[in-house]
Image 1: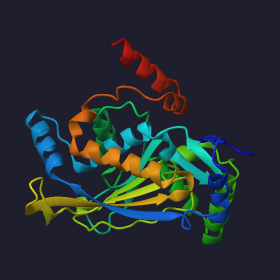
Image 2 (image 1 turned 30 degrees about the horizontal axis):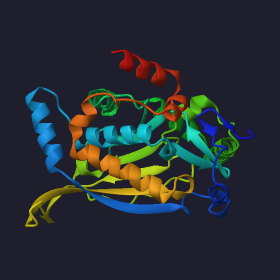
Image 3 (image 1 turned 45 degrees about the vertical axis):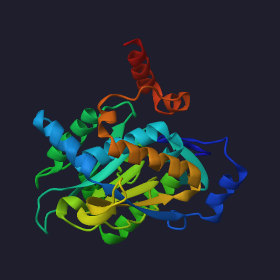
Length: 302
């Protein structure tokens, strides 16, 4: 309560205009901004083939998420959220996504959330993602989120409504227990959906008013399109659409564009993510805790 939450710290030193914006636009639906990035696939494909020859298998999703983890570490203001008119800074970099338990229309989904410090290499990000997918991609698998949802929905409909209403009220005032926050995929830095994996088109996915999701990304099926190459000639290029929806209330446009340009550079040169970041800013070290600071110090000593 009173600006304190288990999953974030209240941001105090902010511009007066930015401070009043959450009261003008009280919900994320009010404050959604949408953009589209046609991701060049050629550098991703070349990197994936090169690493496959070395026995390491990467996917587009590994690269997209790993690049976003670097972005959050480099641009920490992107890792903020708005609750009850206040702007908070996430304690961790968190990424949520959906795992289909079986490739059939009737198969249920599993919601997964992973935590990062920002110091991870690409292979460390890959391992976390693959372990989460392997643990959840069968019908019998039940993670903590599944169990919590099943517990809530075992009751009659009116009790489900009351329970969800109570959870929202507690969340609004920073009183939701950390155990529930840890299980909730809606309390996250980034939510990403990989529609490419089911050969689907990309979509502009709305932000949830419940939780803390500040950015939602949707990857779509890649296609061949005409592009202008470095010589000014029109050639056939392979592009993957990535639709991005953001909450504009905690981050100005210049900061967001700068962050996304950095993300684009990482995707065009994925080898940069094979090693940990050279350094984290002092702000990032404070935000992401002692573990990130210790890892940064060990890297300097090495």
